[in-house]
Image (tube, rainbow, N blue to C red; front, side, top):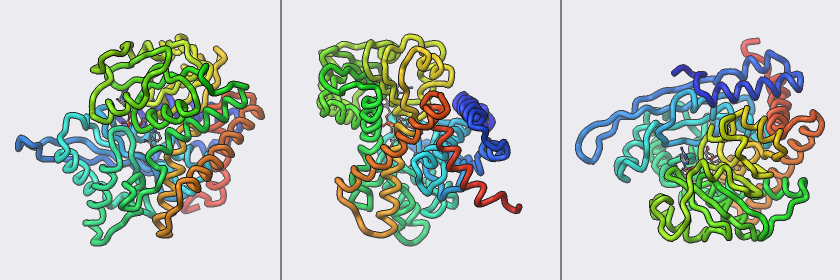
Length: 419
Ligand code: NAD
């Protein structure tokens, strides 16, 4: 597969071109944003517990660094490939620009199902992958973070490996690390909390109350889906369905979120849970709920199933969960969509806070972090909403237009090297 072949890359380019044309973006700017700045593919051989050697494919892509060092997660998932990683790096460029961070867009990953590896094998994989990409990353170059299939422990191994290679501890090489080794309060919940903040901003615009009459379905019960579920439940909403890769569970009166979290964190799949109603991931999309949060993976709502979605409010917790055609269909059907580069930006915003706190060696309290997060997301939401009114477009197109505006200004100031 070439760099630009994946469905997510093609779909993202089509969406960007549409927004660029609506706002009258300089075609020379779009031309420069069409391809990543650089992309690295590495072989990651490790010795498995049974003594055999297995080689995995790893990637790190930096899309655009006009605004600052690259920023983006590392994904361990069987669907990872070069082109999907490049598309996700591109979305990071627009996300960082939209929420006003001094950071560029990057992404990495390894094509692996982490649930098939032991802890020792996962550590070996992370350390070898880090070694292979170590000249490509760094606090002033490109700063990874967790994504699907990776977590604080993965970031700790990455930090340690990078630091061993440098000969001194370099906490600023990653974000999303455990608090005891320089992580930020609030980072683990930041993406899901940001999703819940954005849902509240949207609800205000739509005249919708978040209370016991509000039903929510969440596709993907992981680092994004879980804190979003907890936050909305704490506001009184009923979380009626959640899912993981194995399937979904449903209860019209509301799922016991705490029990489901305990179950999931013990490494068990939801389809193994007893005493609950099981439905498929596809059924979850079709539920008659007020709010749908696709928070698993890209490309799950397409032109083939978008017409079954009944939710009035769709919050893209994942990156690219709805294809361009699906967004057109749900928007035509009257749904209000909070686009990924806004909706799930809480993660990169608190990653930015973590990076800043690490650089100044001074750490903030949780209230300060959450109130700064709320402020940045509120400004970004209002900017996207006002842009959607100005151009009479949906929130997805408006988010890209708003991000283009900042990137275009910055790229013009810096010019094109060598001129
Ligand atoms: P995670 O690994 O913690 O959770 C992913 C969830 O999705 C799990 O429940 C998993 O079982 C499920 N899943 C995986 N593949 C699936 C499939 N093919 N069909 C249905 N369910 C599937 O990952 P996460 O960090 O919560 O990331 C979820 C999404 O949010 C991704 O698109 C990621 O890029 C995006 N995101 C994450 C962060 C972050 O801070 N973690 C920030 C911004 C965006």
